[in-house]
Image (cartoon, rainbow, N blue to C red; front, side):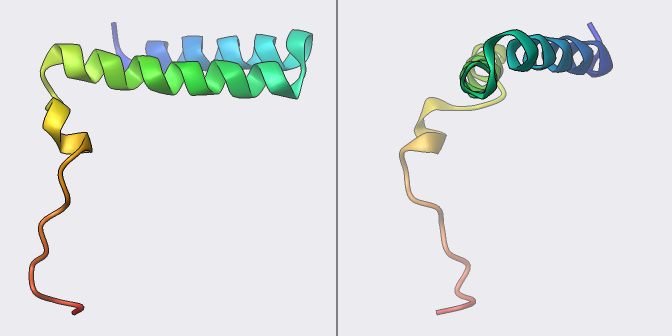
Length: 63
């Protein structure tokens, strides 16, 4: 499934949630969508679990 179709479905879900459930439902659907996105990327192997918990490496600039 292309990313355009996924974006279409996500936008429609957020629109329905906002229209029928109000702003709180809109935020809930958006937050659960973000969690689902990260879980999907993790299951696809695009994101490693340690990437969320280890500190970023500094390159020496901006000390």
